[in-house]
Length: 74
Image 1: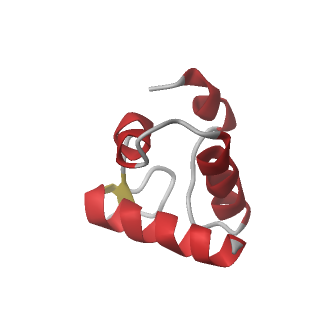
Image 2: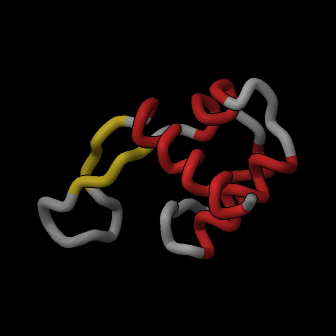
């Protein structure tokens, strides 16, 4: 389901991401971050399904990224 796919995505980001200062967040706020290339490598291929999951997760405010980044590949 969509909810399970978004939850899995968040788990993968927590597992392979790095803790960084939050962009646009209050001072001292940390966020888990991962480069798209590393995320896509984890999913083996850049697929429309992964892009859809990322867009749904962003709509739920679980992830944050610039939209055009998805279409630039790695």
